[in-house]
Length: 151
Image (cartoon, rainbow, N blue to C red; front, side, top):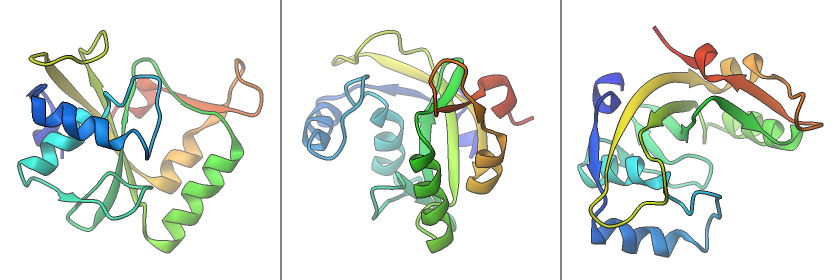
């Protein structure tokens, strides 16, 4: 997976912007769904298979992968999210989290080119085991980016 991600430059196309607009009914996010660009590109280029469940973004080999684009930390707001991920892992609809960084600094617009950096690919139970209680968000959890770095 590292070879597919590290240094990958993806241009924002009209097709992507139309796809992103159609996703608004499914998910809302502070980045305006800009995090979809990498997974959209991987699916369009047939490097991964499109997912079938809201819990994972795509399928690669036997892995059901949820992509997380992070800056300094990976944050989880509640224990309910951890339970959901754990239940999804047990049923086989989510197996891994793929952590990536990017040089995106603002909401995406047509013609932007975003370059991605591979951080790590973690099996769900391993990631859940790394989370520590948040000191900023009561009831929340986090993992610093450098802990997620996969050598």
